[in-house]
Image 1 (tube, rainbow, N blue to C red):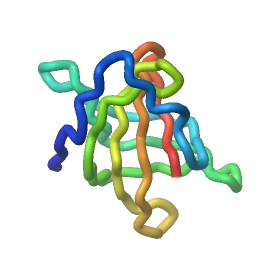
Image 2 (image 1 turned 60 degrees about the horizontal axis):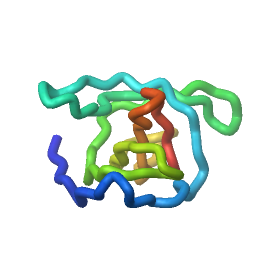
Image 3 (image 1 turned 180 degrees about the vertical axis):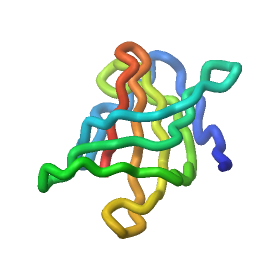
Image 4 (image 1 turned 60 degrees about the vertical axis):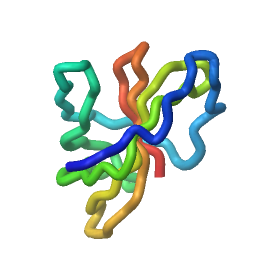
Length: 103
């Protein structure tokens, strides 16, 4: 699994609000010795109410962001969701330790 730091934003830079459809997720992640969260798999409730599990996440990039002033880590990813290969973003909010998926 490879990734690269796409940018190093200063703390005062604001990325606005995330765009796309947001899903709250339960994320299984591990943290590097430097404290960087790395998503391994996650579950979320689909539009039809079914709980879906997503594994084998391929991380394309990672960026430090500030959405509406909230420090976060954004991961550009791809994985099989509902039988289709999908591109999506996972966002980890540092202050609340919560994850969301944006499609």
